[in-house]
Length: 148
Image (cartoon, rainbow, N blue to C red; front, side):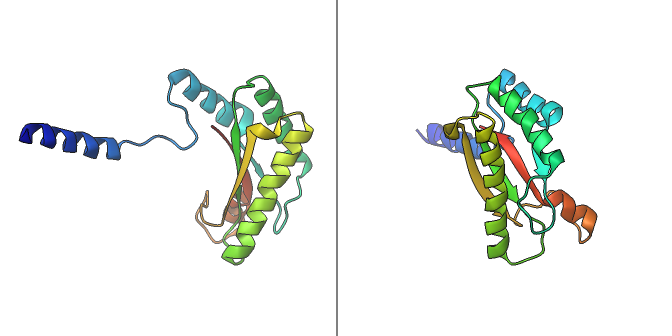
């Protein structure tokens, strides 16, 4: 009986140590779709300082996302809104939500069903790049579309 308990505890510890990439699927085919979306289509758009307005470049990128998602109707997404480190936590959470919502609205206007898109704001809590200059800040002012 002791050996069974020890074995079960070891399995629980190992299961707790396993990890999966955020937004990726469990099967190989689905993982390759995630890779295709991130690397070929592009999973993010960028914003100007203190803005949730979509630039022409962002709209073109989102159009590619909408077209790809239209060809994969079973895939749902979460749009993550992010900000640079400047501003208060509360301000950046609200700005991140406006950014994610702007992307979601563009996708819906492009024909994507509302039930396929969720949003979340991380504000300044998950920077893509650490740094205190415009180069880093510009990469952190973004919305990222994550496949579910």
